[in-house]
Length: 380
Ligand SMILES: *Cc1c(COP(=O)(O)O)cnc(C)c1O
Image (tube, rainbow, N blue to C red; front, side):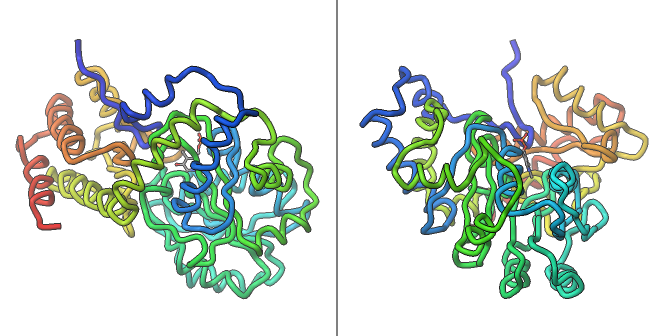
């Protein structure tokens, strides 16, 4: 027997109390019991998204809400600006292409971020742009974008800012109302410590104006219809009842820890992970603004990163992730989001030492662990 560890950047481990909450017998969603559950969840989601407006859940993976954001706010023939700094940025472009929306890309080399100044400039050259599409945490490269700065650049233009926060909600600070973000998309299986299957959209007043003007076809992912039901404390279609039970528990956990502490914990875990990786002489893939959700690492010269994942799995029963698209074979990714503490990072790093040694790379045993422990020993 080898104990199993899930250390990929999503799905992430589910806390035992959440697993137990989800193991309750099924209830019907048109009952007083479900209404009580949904009332509490709606209030908790507003605190989590830092908004006074309703957050709209869908039964889907995160990409479902990305599609919902596009089809409910845009029309065929529209032009939008898209940050292209990794695989998830390309996903926005693929969704837009499927619906006849033209994306003007604002590209950064993978591992870098697109700056708020670049977005401001692109908005000046494209006054017709209806939206700016971006990732907060770009999970394929491990960078975190400046949502606050880009929101400031977008405010006062006809464009809305649509943010994919699937790997940042409950991980990095994201103030929907205060920063003037127009549409935030999230999912259940990253920072929210839940199984995959729930996604969310949260909209500003300006974004609801775009919904009224939008002409793209939609049926299941209809924000206006779903929003009306949510306002009545109902779901338009059958909700993911069990995951909602888990979500109530997660929201209680996040409230008990306090959002600022949740963000600080992730920042510290990420810093310790980076210190450990660098202590082994490895290169971080993120060259700017590393994400607190995950760390993307360049495999040592001459070593295929797929070998690193395979050794993590075969020798230690630990799942991490590889590189996506053009980064496949070059990069491996360690997740540290959600139900993660100091000793998960220590485990991932000590396993990394073992794995590199196993693959013939010289390792100063303990170097990565020592570097992480020094970060953990700093006074908070
Ligand atoms: C995980 C993730 C998604 C959603 O992917 P699904 O597989 O559809 O849940 C979207 N964006 C980012 C940045 C992600 O990390």
